Length: 136
Image (cartoon, rainbow, N blue to C red):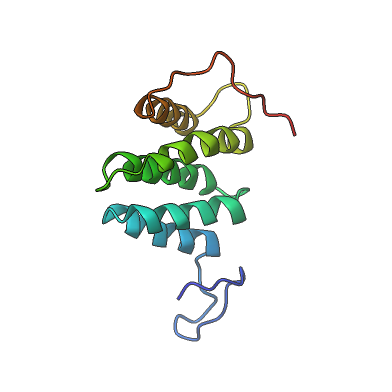
């Protein structure tokens, strides 16, 4: 069982502490929702992973799948939900600043930028000349 307190506990069944970390459990829950195309709960769980575990390995993966879930809600849901594209555009900038630092962005970070551009296109808007910088 995945625990929310962040500490592995000895379940008494496997002869030692539970091997998974909380962020991995939460990411796994989100992946299940994502794989069965339940976009809204997938988005909520992925967003939680990013918000509460941004310094972990899974944060960038969760961020990309969070944005993909929003994109699917905006494009594929019936009825379509353009407010999800609006949220995607806002959060993509914030997540990129938070998770994609360094001189060479990863393929996941480039993918987040592509999703942002797709959302802008779905909203009938073009890429602004210059995006806000990542000032902290």
